[in-house]
Image (tube, rainbow, N blue to C red; front, side, top):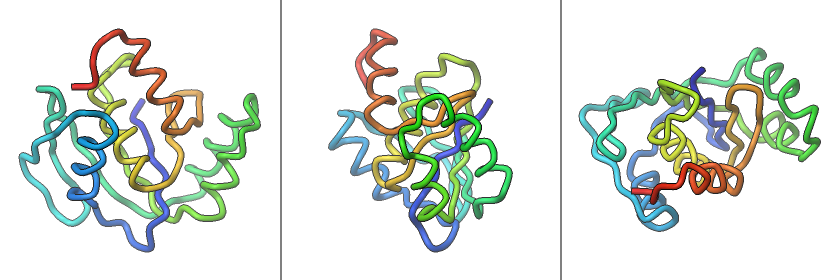
Length: 139
């Protein structure tokens, strides 16, 4: 159920400052950091606390991404497989978890990788469309 965000990073480390800049710049939003380590953080997005963890990408991530991209053939699997060595896992509490989607989109915009949701591999543009479809402002 969690979002997995593929990242073009060398090591699994959180990039909280870059994510905060992109949240403000691209999503007119902010988030607060409750606590963090190099690979895990508890952040509050739009009043909702969510956990993000960083880890090395594994074969299961690629297998799931390939299966989920098959219907769309948008090339995002190739990006994930060839360039993304890290995965950020964003806690998601429901299918319409707006806070988790906003956080995943923000991370993807900085990490330059696709988002793997339940049954779908998508990019930042699609994440924006999903956020807009929820009918509420980004904040």
